[in-house]
Length: 77
Image (cartoon, rainbow, N blue to C red; front, side, top):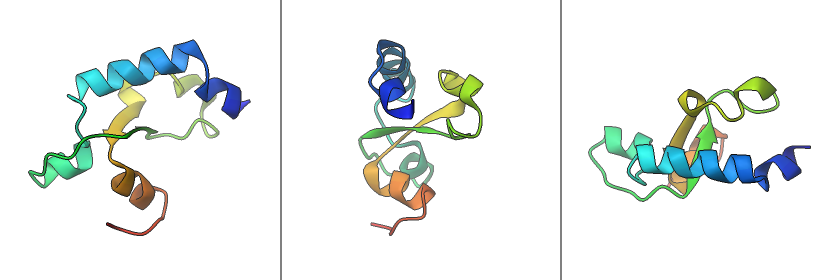
């Protein structure tokens, strides 16, 4: 299940690698020259759409909570 995936060692390791790669900064904010710490690691292609990409670093981007909510249709900051 998705829940057990997000608790898995594989996900935690891959998530950490994405954060390290992105210097623990929100990549969307960085495009606007803002240095915002990343709280989330977002799947560009969602896990439920393509299970095979769940641990693909190229499918992951580090985001702050506000940008992650925007990506998922939530409110802006």
